[in-house]
Image 1 (cartoon, rainbow, N blue to C red):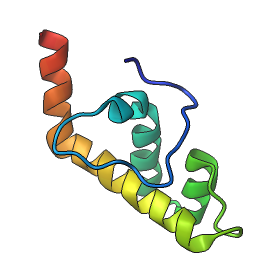
Image 2 (image 1 turned 180 degrees about the vertical axis):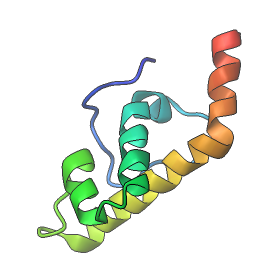
Image 3 (image 1 turned 120 degrees about the vertical axis):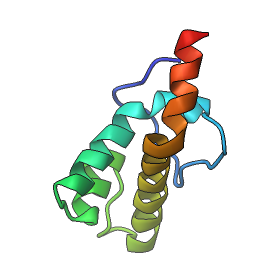
Image 4 (image 1 turned 135 degrees about the vertical axis):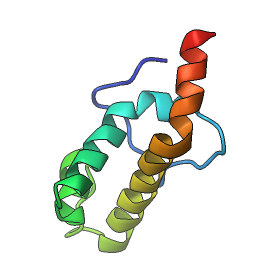
Amino acid sequence: MPPVLDPQIADAAPWSETLTDYDLAHLVVYLRLLDAEREGADWREAARLILGRGADVDEASAQRCWETHLKRAEWMTVTGYKDLLAARRG
């Protein structure tokens, strides 16, 4: 499954110890979150612009969405990319 430019965003990123279809569809989202984090962007702005979640509407929900997706993006940089590379070789 190729990455999608504007995928549907779950309220919380699903967790798995292996690469998921959700991960594959959300690679661009993960990269954007990592870039925003690296640049020191406010989480509220990242949640609004990248995840489509407004902290002004429901701060707790927006923060959970941002936190879980950022955590999954970070997991991809440490572990998940190995599954991604292995799948491309296979």
